[in-house]
Amino acid sequence: MPLGELAALGTALCWAFTAVCFAAAGARIGSLSVNLIRLVIALAMLTAFEAVVRGTALPLDASAHAWTWLSISGIVGFCIGDLCLFRALVVIGPRLSSLLMSLAPLLTAVFGWLLLGETLSATEALGMTLTIAGLGWAVLDRTPPAANHQGARAPKGRALAVGVALGIGGAAGQAGGLVLSKYGMGQYDPFAATQIRVIAGIAGFSLLFVVTGWWPRTIRALREGRAMLYTSAGAFFGPFVGVSLSLLAVQRTSTGVAAALMATSPILVIPIVMFVRRERVGLGGVLGAIVTVAGVILLVAG
Image (cartoon, rainbow, N blue to C red; front, top):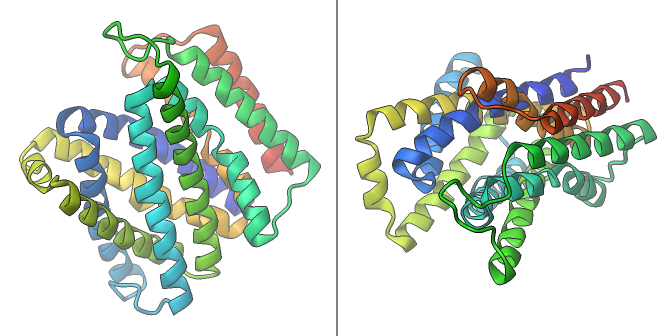
């Protein structure tokens, strides 16, 4: 299997574990605090890793071009994209939010074509279509249409419109972050490139917390031992390993193909929730997973 596609599937696997870890941490200390803390922990991991592997703790050997565009991609992906996604989860719930996030591969392919001149073969285009369709099928089957499990009604009117806009914003942030990362990174080390993105993300969230007065809540969150354990595990699988693998993926293959393979993480979560959390998965979830796997095979073969 080509290295880029293998790295993209590795990213999806990491994000499957990350979703479980951050969901558990966010339930205890709030998603905003988790967002910043996970980046700080990941920065420490990346710094130690780079010091051992490359002999330099910080990416000071990166060009001005790399620093500029990777920093922008960090703000777009970690801050804007994630903030839109987490807010969408509140407004329209996980079912519709996850469905809208499945648009990320399509938006990535469009952005990659506009900025990088990338194109997809017919096989890759068919594989992406099957992957997105399978993801949508599985996501729609996973969660009941109610906004939550407390009997709240599904969003309507303006709330639905705002939630959909936020969900699309989350998908666009993820797509834009990937394409800008590839543009800024070139052949630079993916882990060092991730380090630059994480530094920019920390700066963005820090400024946001100053404006919103969120720092006291985040400082209190540091005393929640179990939440910190979950956040640390999520930081390892997410910003440290997962994001670095995602940059390796877009470095070695087209951004659209990489994004489609990375988007399979909801499918990989299915066996986790089945065996760990004892959740039931319906026939639609299983069939959607099968369609997604067929798309993945075409993407890899293409």
